[in-house]
Image 1 (spheres, one colour):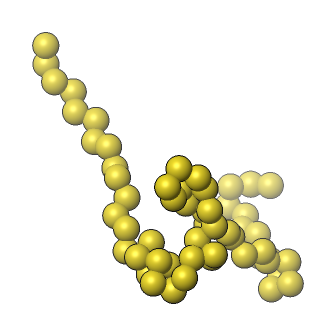
Image 2: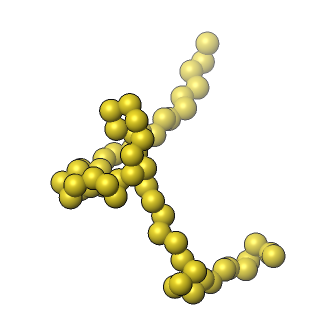
Length: 56
């Protein structure tokens, strides 16, 4: 398969992706959260580390 080829799936071939997050020391699926917690999770900002090279 070349890099320019895209795969098209029929709707019955698709599978929902389950998102898990770490809560209070253990992992749990976000789908099991109540609506308020799900909303709070969607508003989270993700940490992005910027690599800074400092001269010595």
